[in-house]
Image 1 (cartoon, rainbow over the protein chains, first blue to last red):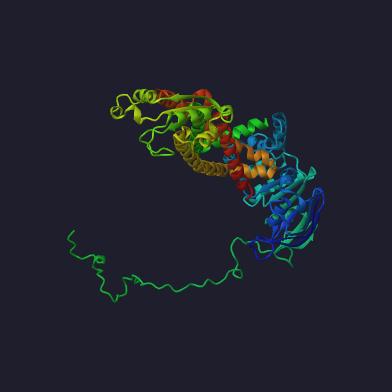
Image 2 (image 1 turned 30 degrees about the vertical axis):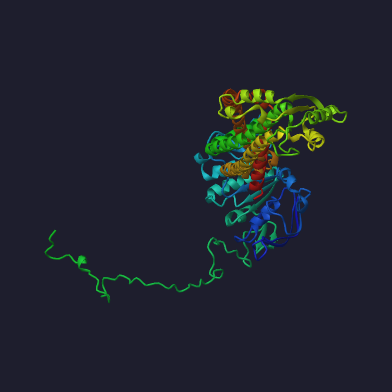
Length: 283
Length: 304
């Protein structure tokens, strides 16, 4: 279904590869977690499958297509086999729930009759059967993500890619989203999910692929989010001390303005009398 | 269903940046009006050429007692010399090219002159003997005046041979310069129009970037994504082209046929019936310009 053979991805400006010699096979119907710190290559992995990026070396086969040789012209029809969900939902704010999901079918030229059949069905699948006419901002985060999932799977893709789909959601809501994804997977769709969510990975007990600095360092069926031997630094939204470089500050040549401190006398005669409240205030 | 989706998207694009669309319309209007005016001038030049060239004659001026030009030596052309010129005109070498000719005597010339310059003080200064006797020659093909020059130019008693078309060439070269100027301005304006359309389309794409991202994600075809933008550009430019056609028609009806034709009654002017042919060209030019610049703009935008 998805096969990576020695895949590397080097970005033009990057000094180290985003993905380095990755080899992996995902079978139809599998549920795979991609874990790893930010910058470990999870997103690059998904973007390569989505053919948003071209690989630098190696071979990627998805659904029998050789992505290295897939021409730009054929990318749209290839992508119809994939569904994608993001952390930030990416819904159209001016369209209703129904129209958001229908949009994915309309732009593929599906008939209205088919759309009026398929959209309510998929909204029922994600548990939003009664919210067809709401606008995204009227929904909770979890409900918005359900709309995004509905849009991703309404076209019945063989593969669902999810890039931190629970990243913006609280644990209870995340669990609900995971139920939806589990159902979709149970119906036969291969799911590939990049995540930081320890509880979810430990709970689901599915295959875990761990990336570190662009390398696959662990590939374990029924795995945990992290192993004792391989702890993942989770809170990586800030640079670590080891990452940060000392910043050299050039001395700037300027006339220093004397710091004003009323408690110490200054060399220059500054009239501070206005600070005192004279006993005999004329005002 | 696909087409209606495309049209609705295009309409939304027009609505969302109406000011840019209006500026595209105006720039297209102005630039295509210039293009159309250049075409009008060319049509007018062609019209005048066919009108005047048919009337243009070759004048063979004979010597007067005052002329020093050509073979003249302040000697009036003699009867023998006149007969020799006449014999040349009737000879087998020239007759195939000559439609007709006639002789204008001093007195005929004087009569014509006074008629032409009636009321002008110059009439009082001119006497019949000042005006040369002339053979007026109408050629079958006005471009072959050189034959007459060669045959008669060097003959004794002939002062000069003048092709009247040379007087017209000055006017035509002036009109040609004017139409070239119009074309140059039009080219500049068309470049501006193309860039403006490209900018408008990019703005339009930017305001719809969420939709575009999702379309690309779910695998909408490039054709499907790009067409609304191209339609948007073409619609704006076509409105401009239609207005430009209206402006050209207005120029012809009100300025050329209304004002110029009554101010210069002897000149033949183009009419609306002659300029219909320009309109499809203008509409096509506007549409092609808009479609190609919109296509380039949206392709570059989508390439990421």
